[in-house]
Image (cartoon, rainbow, N blue to C red; front, side, top):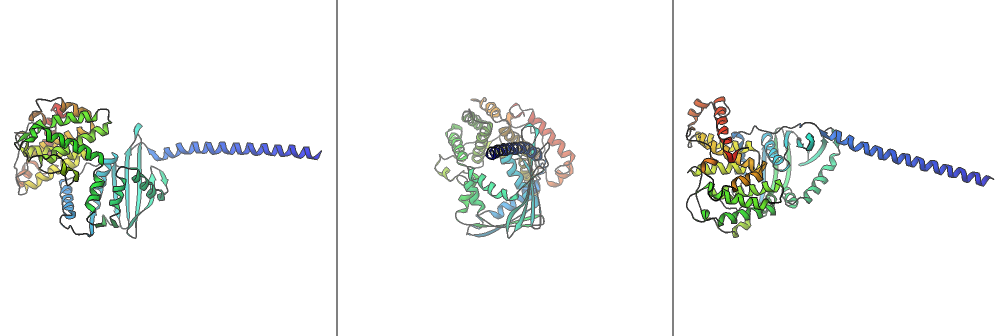
Amino acid sequence: MSAPVTAAASARQGRRLLRALAVGAAVLVLALALAVPAALLLALEGSPRVLPRDDLSHADVARALAQLQAQDPRRRAEPGLRLLALGERDLDLVLNHVAHRWLGSAMDVRIERGLATVQASVELPAGRWLNLQLELADEAGRPVARTLRVGRLPLPAAWLQPAAAALARRHERGAEVLAVLAMVQRVSFFPDRLSVVYAWDGQAPGRVLAALVTADEQRRLEAYHRALAALPEAAAPRPVALGRLLPPLFALAARRSAGASAAEAAAENRALLLTVTLHATGRSLAPLVPAARDWPPLPAQRVTLSGRDDFALHFLISAVLAADTTSPLSRAVGIYKEVADSRGGSGFSFNDIAADRAGTRLGELALARPRELQARLAATQPAGIEDAALMPPWHDLPEFLPEAEFLRRYGGVGAPPYNRLLAEIDRRITALPLLRP
């Protein structure tokens, strides 16, 4: 009789074990099911911790230009180690440019001795925000992730480097970006300052350009360059109104954007504006895209707006900047030039500022409403766009003001009289149907 009793007991024990395993599995599944929403609840927040920056000044632009000139490889073409020193303010502006351009987000950076703290806020659907905070420590000249937080959720900082490398490998320009980063030999954090030592050799310009311009972007630039070269208006070295060049090119952008996403349509607009701007400034795409040396040549040509080539240049450069970065940068660049002119150049001119801000508006529309802008400008064919449709009324705006006169009448950049006149210029731009937001 003992054997059956033992078998029954064993069966009961087996059933109890199975029930325990089932209960354990159910608890584990439930814990995982609850952990994911809990993690999302901690990671996602209802507001950004970093707000978009709108405080870029002409002084920032002047400093950035000086930095670029100091790093220009034409000044020291021989191979060797180079030093780049960036103040906290400059690094903050650079990171904000990158974040806005590629992520549509805002960033903030703080630097102290041996440590840098970077924060970013990325907007998500349904009014949620992804707030990131990363602490980087300077360890033997290499930045090493110390802490990483997503919202209120801490994550292992050791995940960051392999995750970033994996993401870079999947990106279209990942290999090129990694090659540029490999040029960096040492990174050091000092109070309010970042120091980078990098290696420069004969291959460095090619690596940098490859990281900056994708194959798709090169194809877009070639399409608009060839279309511009084929226009009768651009075939002769005589002056041409900007309003004659833009409509057929935006018609091409509309055709190339058919069936594409809004982001791809915006990319078409950026390539178009860059192509026209380089043509108006008499510059070649070849330094940016070496293959452009084999594209059809464009004759040197004055491109005008309201009969003036300086207005066309102000307009186009601001449009390109606004289409490729934040609008505060494009405005600051224009103001920088005017402030520099008032200190011994041609003088501060509000009509130039009007051209800057009109171009900025076009660049903003090229990104925010790419298809609508394409349709607006393409619809002006074959007559073209009248100057007054792109440039607001400007004949009554003061120009050629020396610095002392500018300060006496308007109090300087940012003073109430200055801001009132800028508001009037913006009102005039908004009244233009082609540039209406």
